[in-house]
Length: 300
Image (cartoon, rainbow, N blue to C red; front, side, top):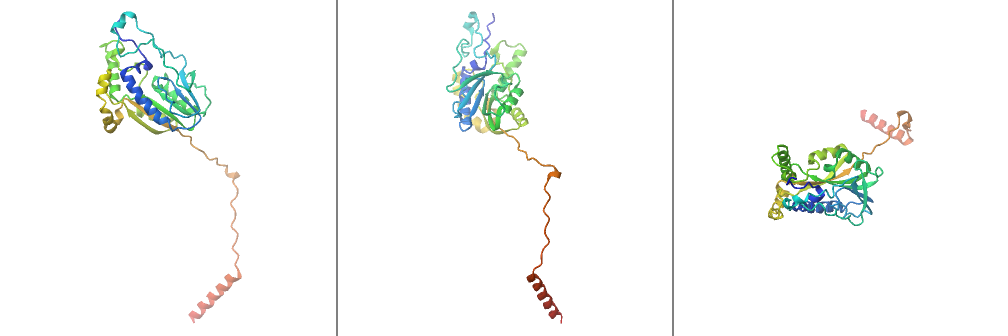
């Protein structure tokens, strides 16, 4: 049996010190984004560790889990590896977090949502696209179920950040066999990062308009809570000097539906009204006569 750290998914990674730091920023940002969004129906796709609808006031809210997803609690490591396990990795045998209050649970395929077309007012995607097997299909399905002017909130890791660079170096370390196991990676290995610019292109192709967004989590890729606290000062500096290099981004996009005006065929158009001829009045003739007499007297 190897001494490598156990493989964990994103829900369990969020219980580590950097995961809790990331979760706190995402929860605060999502709460601010969805607090003033109104409608009747809202859903969150995946990642129940984040309660993306807790500050929203829509009467009908659902938490949608992926069909057959078992990533909430992966298998635990063998007993002989417990002594060398990473202390920052939570116990994989822990029970998943309970459902948020007043939210119903649905389990389905994200690429085939069991909702009618144009029936939802808000969709929250916390790291859903980067963990999806087909992010394009998931985003197209979100566009289908949203009403015109409905909103989607997307949260994802930023590959153009210190965390993204650390993850990229870890993947190359694994490829070159310089390290073994998940310890070489800072983030879970599942999923692929989607750059912010690339996501905007996807949204534009589906007639979405980016309404707002932002970046956060500028601290380096550190596993210790002590060192994360020491780098707290970098947060305001990152927001001011290098905002696009945050470890995570949040985007709000609005579904736009172009209106159309029916144009009838030319043979169905009503004929334009003809102008009536002007009728000369007695006053008009009298005025003309006076002008003619005045001109004759001047020429004599």
